[in-house]
Image (cartoon, rainbow, N blue to C red; front, top):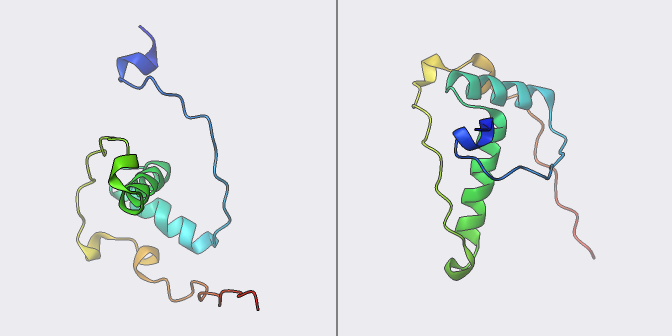
Length: 98
């Protein structure tokens, strides 16, 4: 029995999404994911599934079971970087075609 079938994962991931983010934001996110016993990739995939499900007409959404949520952590258990994003870049004003 292959490793993927033993875990019930028959679908192979075949696509990538590359994005650029600030190092401090990435580090805080990855550290928080580790504290919650999950991975950054898993949480981003979950966000994408939820976002699509909430922004797509119900008839077009394929039923995909969501993974179990990670245990909640009290704010004092979070890394300082996850709580303090004051040095995070400010939102840019969107460019409008005029």
